[in-house]
Image (spheres, helix red, strand yellow):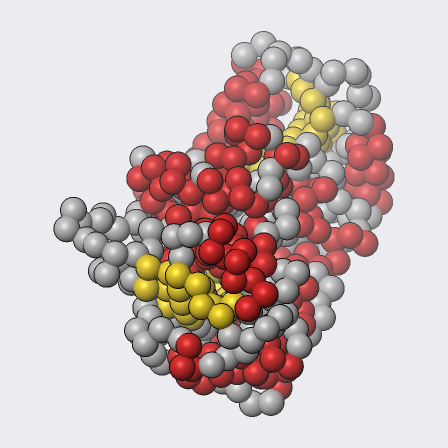
Length: 504
């Protein structure tokens, strides 16, 4: 998994890079300006560029960009703003001296630009160091730009957003609404929060070659995964495997009227590569399962809602999944309790959907989850388990605390699914698309993770790889179908292609 860092740690990595490479901080500003210039020239045709530059290092990046674009004969207007103090950072002063030595025109302490149709605004007013709300001229120009309708590229992070501890309050403050945000070396925590997407727009990470040693030395609890990282988790199958060596998964799912969840979860489990699957469901779903998923063995217990009966369970299983379409009645609560009490410590387990609904009551009654259990809640399900939250950042912290406290893996589903580990690490999944926001998508994920557990992947790897496979299959389906037309079974149908893409 790839590291990223809280904002205060990035400054230390910057400093360590200057020490290791024997350079001044201004050299990093030059790299950032060049990365910005390269990105703009790749994504935009020649046009008027309006740069709003603040007093700090973020403003220095903007000034450096202006110099580079001016050298390439782009039309550049620079508006600088130092506020009431009139003070600039050291790198900002250095860039201003360079600017003053050219014929590039600039307007000092007047951040309010005159915009023309088709121009591009570069927001380099305030970066990640801001610790207060915008006010005065900076607030005025923010409102002016947001209402102008022009495209805005924010440098590092939209001005006014500030540090991580203020993200829960951003919706009540004056913040630039960027079309694109171009950041350096690492994504920022803000990029993964749905509440902030309207400010950040599309985000892009540009490499400024911070020292690999500095990054390696820096400790973090924050990681993200992409196709290349997920692919590293895959094991190679031996030619001599057979169904008996590829794991036996047990899935308890489905009830009258909700057999689709059991079918999709079963099919996804089989597509994930498991050797054997036994699906236990209510008698009402027997014919459906036998017809829709002939590759699975089907057992029944209970008439319309599954009822746990140890005598009807397979004697040997490699992993257990419980929840999709299970129902929320007394029988389901009893089943979830008996599964956890009977199978806990015997086989790894994944719990989802109605299993999570039942789990809240059972945990209140003192039931302990087996160490290494995987739960896969969506935001509403997590709130039911941990209490209501007003912001995604709070919800992520709650998921991480639950993972640590109970020694389990929490997969908090969303646009950037977060996998919270028992040791405090959190991994953000950067794959997938909005087409996956469709009924049954979560049931498919449960099946994939169950299949990986049954094949012998440990809980953390099964969660990471399962989310990756599920997301890449969704991306392939979107490429074929378009995001609007996707349904959950499209994800299942593209799991094979997802495996191929992850293997490269």
